[in-house]
Length: 485
Image (cartoon, rainbow, N blue to C red; front, side):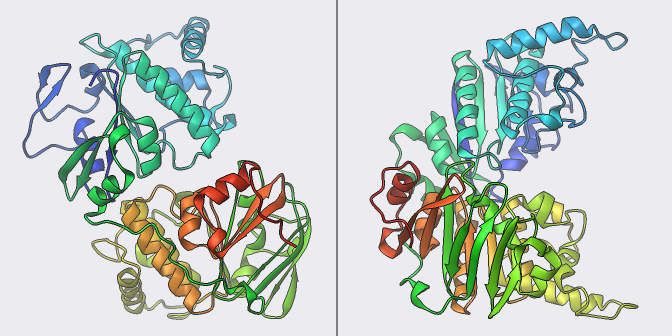
């Protein structure tokens, strides 16, 4: 409806992306009809025509040029308004400043996009889309924005900033389709939501009067338990991993232990330092000092690199899987076999048949949905990319698994599959450290949780103390839980 924020939910492969590509003119539909502002729109929509009929899109990668300025990104491709032969930069900068001021955005037209914060980049992409659809729309209406997963890589404070912007656009009459896997975000920001499953509309809900469990069941086709998936606290066993006096740019003198078969959760508010720990222990970022004891051997973290970490049985699952976890242009087989590249074949000849077979087995075990092991990694949905990344490293039977936001931008069904694989690894004695801002995730899978504040451990929660409400209270200072000894 005009001035409505409407959520679009569904598992990976449910049809959300196909629908968006039809509306943007990238796909030709087999049949169907479309109305915008009460007027019939012929299908298929010609490429580049969507803004003229009142539709504009912001995709997850934002489609910004990092080396260009804010102003250059704002007007790039705006052929309907900007003179193709001469750009009045002073006038365009003044117009940009008026636009930013109108929407309460602190953006400098002359700043390079690569120097902006993640939330500023998202704001720029959204305001560019809103401006285009408002000025190019043949029907002179505020138009409709389709935001495809705008928040997965933003911390919670930045999400709030972005939501404030969406509410201002809504108040101006702009309609917004908010595509997301995060049910809590959809329930917070949307007026209504529609769930797709297997290409069909399962139902539409008024989010303010709908129970979260109803939406989960509509997405996955069954109810999912929100109870804890782990049993007793294994922390009383002999330590599998011991970290002492870890110090870096943010963290200050951290000591922690993880038992074999234990999932230790790390969390806190933005900037508290908890999300630095996995990268420091994997040698991906330099530590100023600190030691790591694994299998009875001490390693100095000052001189610890990724290659030594892998040789020691330590693997890292980074938050940004597309940039740091997978080589998206390579096939699934090439991605899956990279950690053990020397294991099948020789330096002169690779055993491709064996590698494809091993990858097919890995895909089956980790429920990676793809046509074949020869597909490119870029063709998989986010959830299947994450399951492939997890399988790629867990096939090594590591001693320590380090996770940073392991289910970011992943639907609830795929999340449960990832949880099951992690718990299986715990059953084999693997130690796991999971850094995440998702408190309900920690409630389900963590045996213990360390809450960070200003680079130090502020509180420790064990066993039955690990609940979403207790974690929230600890993060915001309303906790009676003892600090760890």
